[in-house]
Image 1: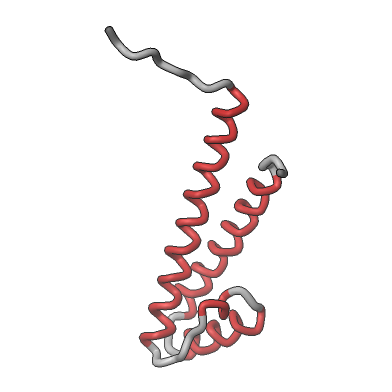
Image 2: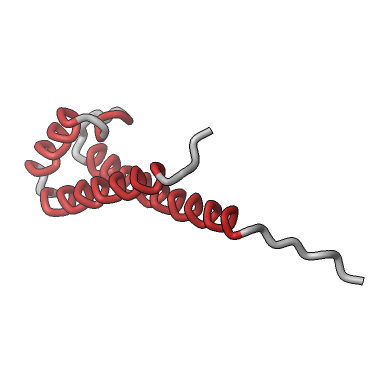
Length: 98
């Protein structure tokens, strides 16, 4: 005999998909932040984890990497981070509150 299969209801399945998508976007954002961190370290600048979260820190990173010749790359990556942040926020707002 085969074990009984269980399927979750549509609401639960929708929540799982929402969480899976949000998780994938967060992982993508972290990967991009790590790329920027690598560029920052390669030009000899000290970097804090929170430097990408403040306008001042982001501007310092942009200035340092622009002067090192990474302007095009870092601008594209920062724009992608901003886009991912918006999408993560949108998905998070659709999660049920406890």
